[in-house]
Length: 240
Image (cartoon, rainbow, N blue to C red; front, side, top):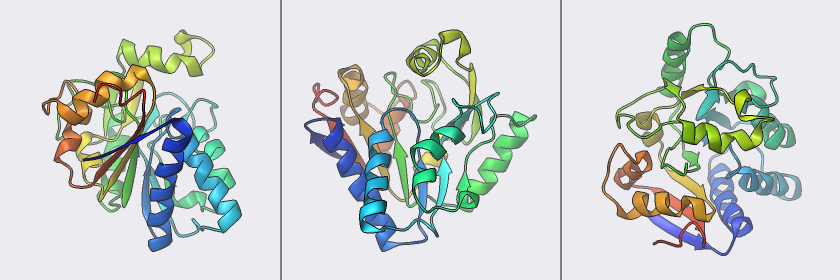
């Protein structure tokens, strides 16, 4: 596990974007595993800037996203499908037909998980972008999730609901369930880039990098992956 400590969020975002852009330039048909939330927004902004200034093309790139809220349609302004369009896809030349997310409004969650697992079996991520939850979750794989899990229906913890409530008008509007890639799906990626910022993530970063591998801190499993780059600002790295 390679750990890069940056001065701030902006530098963290730039370094992460440089890695992803390099992968796309080397392989125009790359498969990008993408994440949502506040952590990767700066990374996506740098990718957009590079696309507009340097012409890096995403026409042949395919994407798979980590997760989606249950009960939200793709056009809901808090869905992760909407997030990806507004924060990245609408500003680069990617074909939306090549972008993939779990469908949060699917009538049968189990069938949708099976569909997404079958898709992931044919699409190994060249790089998987991750954020890190303050409780050590990756995707929506909360503490206690088996390390061999695949795409599954998740009951979100109160901690995660509280963390995500800042994006909603009230905490009552935050969905209580999500569909998430499992830890096994994440670990199948050829490489992983994690972006982490803020003092509230410092304990999780310390456990992930230096602690034992345990389902109580799902991100600790990344110690077993051969190509992980963790890019964190000084605050997030303050306990290392």
